[in-house]
Length: 395
Image (cartoon, rainbow, N blue to C red; front, side, top):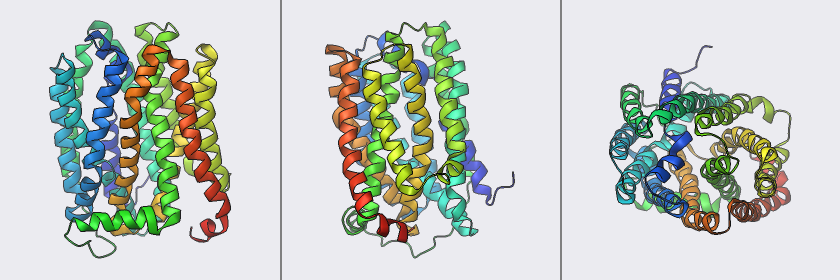
């Protein structure tokens, strides 16, 4: 397959490397092996999300101001340092320091990678293919995580430390590809060199442009829901009594499903209207949580597979809608606003969800998450329906 811009394949490699998360299939078990409970584990992830959220918009602004390439390189360096510290930590506070580094690093990657891909395509007048290549990128990431999951599960069967050590090596080899990226031309003048510009972008995306605001809030609600499920899936498998040696294989299966659906996202979208697509991803996310709360069994795992398939469709679809309504010179900042809302929401609710899971069980945690996502989805879908004519006319 011939790619329209050389940045695309490099971004694919970076995505594959960043998502080659050998540690992820057993990370909850890894933390528990070091004496942490679910409240502490979810608190760590809340701190990670908070650090990412606090630097999300400034990092997106930096990507718009100094360039996506430089921002990506900085993010990759911080990720390497974070994984290095993570691999030699044994206590809550050691892991906390590593999570904070990783959060800041990922904030410099988040938004900049999507904006760089879109502007690279825009540079060669192929921006209409963004959904296709963003779907490809997400599928590569999930296929990478799937393969990494198999390796991670095998290494963890020997020692929980081995996946952590391997993660350091992988993060180091991403750096040369980030350095080799080409900075695409901005399609409009660069934003003013003032931090006040951040407030202007926030004002535009969250107040002035109602259609963009609603897309950001809807995408953030779905994104927060899928992120929380990623951290509840492993405790769910543990309650099912799955042996540790199978965790990698099941994690691989979940990510292969996400990858396959993301790969076909642009074709799936053609079969539905925009409103139908938005309703579909919201419906599955909400009822996935609610149905799993009553099915901590084999049927529940089937629902989990559908939930992950929905994630593969929703992520590129919702990002594409946001990009369509965003000017080029603030695209990275706007995507960072979306990520900030996701991470800040997660940071606020994750410790509570972990506490609920410890005290009352996963079924209650699933019900609370399903209800929270349902509120966000319902409000946004009502606006989309009431303004469907305006929505279509702007696309």
